[in-house]
Image (cartoon, rainbow, N blue to C red; front, side):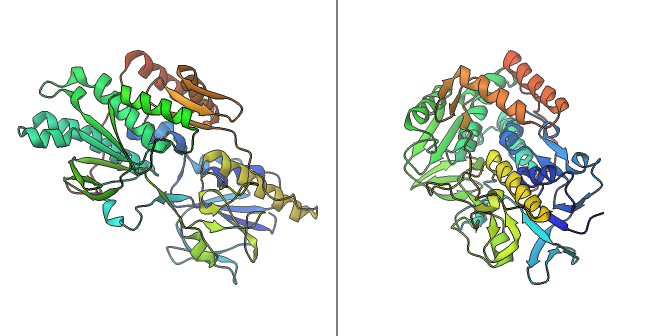
Length: 420
């Protein structure tokens, strides 16, 4: 076993790519994550909206490295870093030393100073978030079926999604299809097609990261599904009784937050500057400033492109950063010159709106509609890990496309975020 010890905190796209690309290098790797699974986050909203089961988008981290004896996987939570002693501190009080540290600890949802909204307006970053949202959506229909008070029934059948980025748009589209196409024949006392799905955006349009032409198409596709769009006014209150948009109160029982992200506290651990979202501001080679043995990648890092614009917090960016840091480490260990500064290669932006509509912007090529939806699906299946999961997801999508029946409509776990 070699002496150089690399500690990787985070088993997301960036951390796994780094560990994979260091195969055969003269190193020991300790990979630490507070969950035992790697999550394919681009499809997390499909778990929240009953399209896919949790096991179809998440895989045990240990399974990836079962044939890599130089990799040790620990189920633990890091709560601090001592850069002088070259150690990371775990929540259980233990410390682990490192020669090189890579922080890939990701991000969570941000409420812009109103964290008290989280219990009634969960975000979507983890499997637990997804199953909580799924449970609330399905329970809303079940409770409405038995509710005698028309006002309460209407509130139960009102779903508000805050934030019209890709996650918000995808959630709104699938919930609308669930209500309009999947559930109508299954209920006797309510008309699920009358459910209100409201998408709230403080800005002027949906999907502002896309060109206006594609954004306009997405808006029309959402309106065709019956989604109500509210632009130009922020959410000012979230309670168990409903949501206030600007000055207007909307009674509802299900709110989903898709309006912002907040990075992990990695910058505070390292005592280095951070941007407004808490992302650590790193050097061009992804090192923490003044700390040559510490790298920060993925959603945890504020990285800029050559034109000064920020690198987006998406899976391809994290994977590229993990691969780059692996090259830097290999060069250092072999005594070779370090590679040049990190350069992000944008591979395109994708978003879906329901079952058969999507938009894709490759820069040189822009697609929308049915064809874009198929390209989107093939791209996501390609990036899934392992043949078994590619087949499982492809089959689930094919079944839904043919039958219009969502395959993961089970209410299983106990409510954990608020009392019924």
